[in-house]
Length: 80
Image (cartoon, rainbow, N blue to C red; front, top):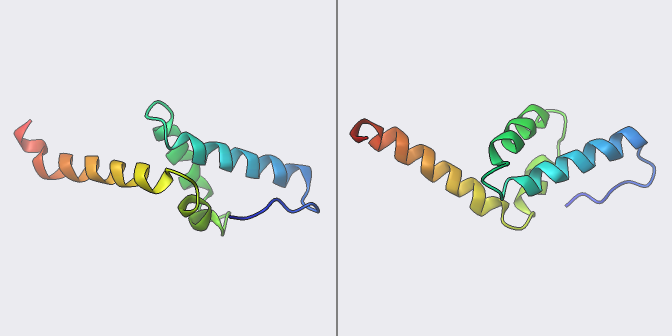
């Protein structure tokens, strides 16, 4: 995971804090959708986003859950 740079500007530190907050919010069903939306907007400007997500506790499991739900609805949605 990327450690905060002591030489980073206050704006960069605030942005990193927001990113880590959104990563933590992926684990909650109530905040997951907004967190994923915000992180998608940042994917081009944050080169370390993938490793940050991968090394965050519970995030990979939550993303697999989202993928499973989407796949289930796309394959079996016509039965509902």
